[in-house]
Image 1 (cartoon, rainbow, N blue to C red):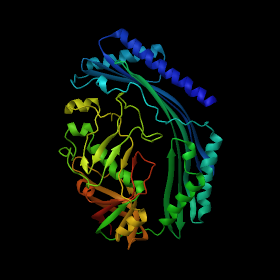
Image 2: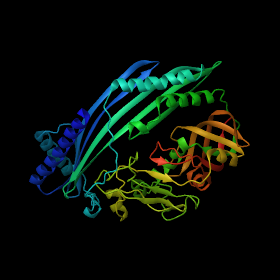
Image 3: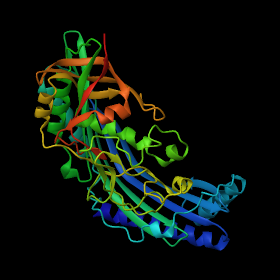
Image 4: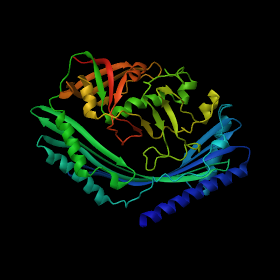
Amino acid sequence: MKLIHQVQTEENLLMNTVNNTLQLAKQKNNFSIEVFAKKTIGINVQIRNNIVENVEFNNDGILFITVYNKFSKGSVSSRDFSIYGIEKMLDTALNISKYASSDFFLGLPDIKLLCLGANDLDLFHPSELNVKNGINFAATAEKEAFKFDKRIINSEGSIFSNHITINVFGNSLGMIEKYKSTLYSAYNCVIAKEKNLMQRAFYYSTSRKIENLEQPSSLGKKSAKRAISRLGSKKINTIKSEIVFSSEISSTFFSYLIGAISGDNVYRKSTFLLNDLEKEIFPTWLNIVENPHIEQGLGSKPFDSEGVKTSVKYIIQNGILKTWLLNSYNARRLGLNSTGNSGGIYNWFVSYKNISFKDLLKNMTQGLLITELMGQGVDIVSGNYSQGAIGFWVENGKIQYPVNEVTISGNLKDMWRNIISISNDVDVRHKIQCGSMLLSKIQISGN
C-alpha cells in the first residue's frame, strides 16, 4: 500500500507540473508547446559469486519542454519541477527557438491524430521494492547455475531489477494524457571450463508482472546449460550453407528493417529500401503486424512521444512493405501523415509456420544454427550485412558440435527473400516476437 500511495503522489505531481507548464505557456502567447514529464522509481540488484556488488535505488524525474515558434524549435529538459524552474525552462526554450533555423515542416502533430483518451493496456503491476527479495532472487539463480554442473567455475553476475515508470504528456492543442507501467527483469551469466577451454553464456527474463518472470532456479540452469553446451567450440571452413537464426536472436535480424523504413532515413534518401514501398521484400507467406495495444506487452503504448495515438497496422503484408515509420516531422517532409511511431516501434508479431524448432532443424539437413551475434555490421544505405556469429553445426537435422569465430555475410534484401521457414518457438522477451528462422545458403567465413 505504501508503494501505491507513493506512485499516486508522484503521478499527481507530474500532472500538476504538466498543467502548470501549459498554463504558464499560455501567458506568453504566440507559440505552441508540448510537455512530457516522466518519473522512474525502482531498484537494481547485482551479485557475483554470492557477494552483493551493487544495489541501486532509482527515484528520477525529468521534464521535457519543446516550443515551436514561427517554424523554429527550442527544446530543454530539467529536473526542477518548481514554478520558477518551469518559467526558466520556457524562457530558455523560447530563446533557443529565436536563434534556431526556420523549418516549415516543424510543428505539433495534426490534432486529428492525437490520443484524446488513452486506453488502459494493463501495463501496471507493482510489487514492493524489496531489496532483500531481489538479492535472494539473483543469488538463487547463480546458486542453481553452479549446482547444475561442476564445470561452471565462475559467475559474471546475476541481476534482478524492478522499475515503475509514470508518463504524462500534454500540448497546447488541448491534450493531456498519462499512463504508467512496471517492468521486471532478471539476468544470469556464468563461465564454464573444461581442460583449458572456457566459455561464457547468459540467460534473462523480462515481464510486466513479477509472477511471469522466469523462476530463478530455471534461469540459473538455463544459463549454465548454455555455457556447458559451448565447450569445445571450434571454427569451421569457409562455406556457403543454410543457416538457422534461433528465436532468441531472430528478432535482431528483423530489427534492421526498423532503420531501413524509418522516416528520417527515407526523406534523406539514405536507405536501401527507398523505392520499395508497396513492393515485395519478403516471401509472400510472411507478415509482420505492429500492435501497440497488447495488454501487458513489452512494447505497448497508448500514444507516441508526440502524443499521436498508436494503431494496429501491417508493416509487412504477404511479403509486401506496407508503411514507413513516421513521426510528424518526417511525415510532413514526405507529404504523408504520422504513423504514430515517434520514439520507435511497438509490439511486432512476425508470422510463423506450424512447425517445431526440432522439425526446422530437420529441414536444414546441413548448416549452422546461430545462437549469438556480435558486432553491428549492417549498412542501412546499401543493405550489406556482416556479423560475427556463435552457434552449432548441424548435420542430418541434429546438432553435432559448437562453433565460434565465424562471420556470416550477405545483403539484407537477398537474405530476407531467402527466408525458407519460421518455426513456432516464439521468444516473447522482445518487442519483435519471432520464432527460429531458416534461411537458404549464405556466406559463412571461417578458416
